[in-house]
Length: 115
Image 1 (cartoon, rainbow, N blue to C red):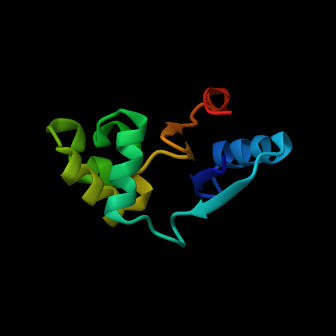
Image 2: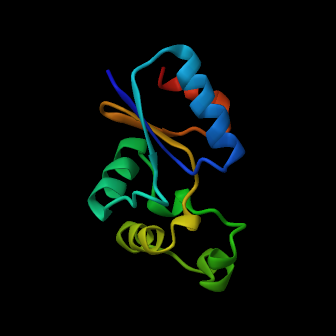
Image 3: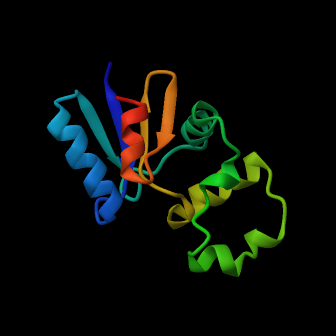
C-alpha cells in the first residue's frame, strides 16, 4: 500500500522521516504542502484518520499561533482546518498517510507505527 508524506522539505524532522521512508523501500508520494496546498477536505480526512482534534496539529511556537491567540480559546475542527489551510506554517509536520491511517510522525520514531 502506497504511503504519502505531507511535509515541508526544509524541516529537519520531515527530512529524517522522508529518508527513513526512502531507505525502507516503500512506495511513496511526497507532498510539499507549501507548494501543493492541501484542500480543506483532504486536511479534514487526515485529521479524521489520525483520530485527533484539528487544533492538536497546531504549531504553538509559530508567530501566527500567538498572534491569533489560539492557546486562549477553543477552536472547532472546521475552524482549525480553515486556519491551517490559510496559514500552512500553523500545521505540525510531517503527516504520513497509509490507507485508512495517518500519523503525525513527530518525533520521527513514530514512523514505525505506520510501516
